[in-house]
Length: 57
Image 1: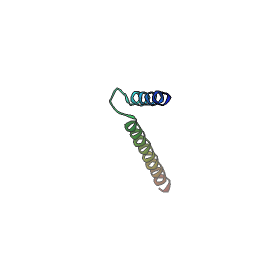
Image 2: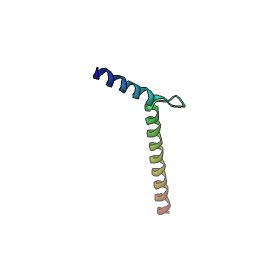
Image 3: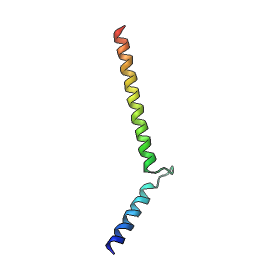
Image 4: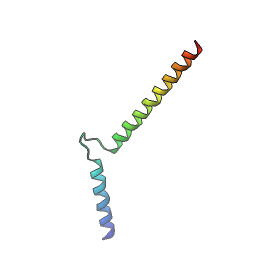
């Protein structure tokens, strides 16, 4: 009985966490977060490279 209760509780939490207004699940949100982080790292590397180029002139 306890096992069934915890199984149903876990499944309900899983299904409610997957609901989103745009229809994307937790994996898509995590992927978008990784993409944003990589974009910001690339931006920082580019800015650092531009700063080094300006310093050598």
